[in-house]
Amino acid sequence: MTLDAQPVPFVDLRTQHEQMAAEIDDAVREVLGSSRFILGRQLSAFEEEFATRCEVEHCIGVGSGTDALVLALRACGLGPGDEVITPSLTFFAAPFAVASVGAVPVFVDVDEATGTLDPDLACEAITPRTRAIMPVHLYGRCADLGALSTLAAERELWLIEDAAQAHGARIGGRPAGSVGQIGCFSFYPTKNLGALGDGGAVVTNDQQLADRARLLRNYGETHKYRHVTMAGNSRLDELQAAVLRKKLPRLEAWNEARIRAAGAYAELLDPALNPPAPRQDREHVFHLYVIRVGERDAVRGRISRHGIETGIHYPVPVHLQPAFSDVPHVTGDLRVTERMAAEVLSLPMFPTISSEQLRCVAGQVNDCLGKSAA
Ligand SMILES: *Cc1c(COP(=O)(O)O)cnc(C)c1O
Image (cartoon, rainbow, N blue to C red; front, side, top):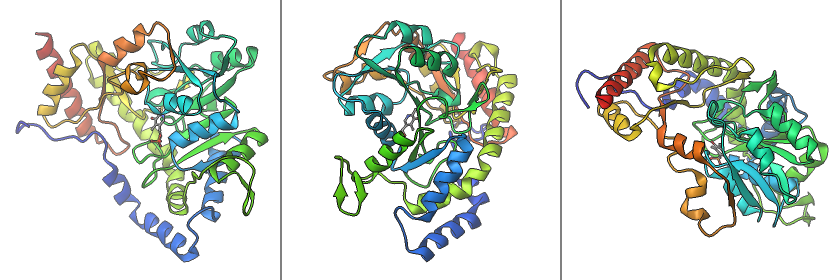
């Protein structure tokens, strides 16, 4: 690290938690006072509050975002032989969830402007075995849910949203997670709404799906010691639910702070870096601020020498992961996915990022770009 630079972390959770230390203490005390740690009133209150926030009828808190995806697929009855259309430019969890229920991920390319599932290509990938479309709202921007929900309805397919990066994002006025039959969220600590550990939720307007998800998260138990379906446990615990209840009222302000930071980046950064363009029909909540740059690894190395942390989301598309080498899947032409995986670079982004930090990052990135092109 050179002396002129101010180090900028990729994510800073400490400042956020310092600002609400008293509320977090209260949350912990409330749970200790109740001495109820699993499936208590903090969870049911959070479920109600998060359902309201997502403008849906039901929310079921589960152990992680990955479990939310697995339970959603199981609640929809997906299993061996079924095909699920999903992107490969994403985190491993959604394709893992598909494979884990015995279904076959069908990897489809993304739209270059948004990095999300291309609806025309999704349509072409439908076969008689296709049962579901599972788009991912990558980086905090909704996939094209208008086109995808029309397609899913016409072809009688489930639409399952991976909204793990998109708490509070909207498309056509509707919140992420509320357009498909089921939306899946993660409360991993760095997400826009993060717990102090693992957590997740599924949201739905469908009473039957909600009932099934509730069974599946708790041993398939309808009454004490009566198990009607094969299931283990995956529950959002009371401590996490109590903390999430303190954080949820701040989600909107935190998202606005992310959007402001993204606006500042877009003004400061060299246009050659493809700063993400806001789109009027989709409210991007900038879980990640991702630019695209050739010679990405060289640029990243230079920036890191100035103390600026960056990330890559994701360097290896899921269809190329070793785990999929001997697991059934279908891979179409993924040229946009592969090109993006080689070029994407995530810059520091968190609600409390300061204008000085933003200027420092943008300055170094612009500088490194000039040097690497030279
Ligand atoms: C974080 C994430 C998940 C998984 O969530 P966990 O809570 O870590 O299990 C799934 N999909 C996407 C797109 C994610 O970013």
